[in-house]
Length: 92
Image 1 (cartoon, rainbow, N blue to C red):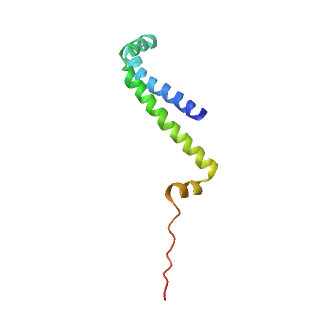
Image 2: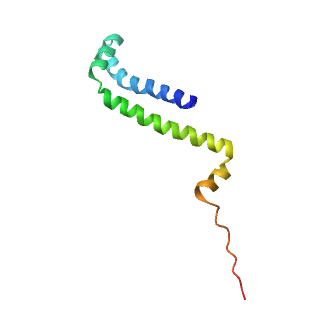
Image 3: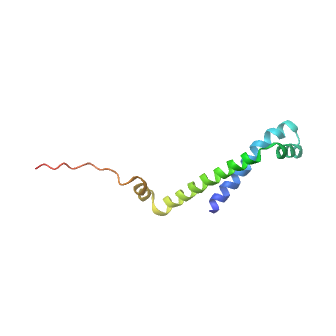
């Protein structure tokens, strides 16, 4: 969970800066650019993207920990079954 929180915080900062920097570049004033961004941003869309990132990051971290705990071969076998080896043909 803590890795998910760290990744989500980093994504939140990057996403906010992604919108802030172009406004800051045009306005040449960080304070004015931030006020303009707070007034113009579509908050439901912003938070929907953050929520989607939360879900994806949680599943990534959970699967990564599962692979670390069980081993890559065991997880591969669990999800995809045992690999098909050469088949023996009986001759009678």
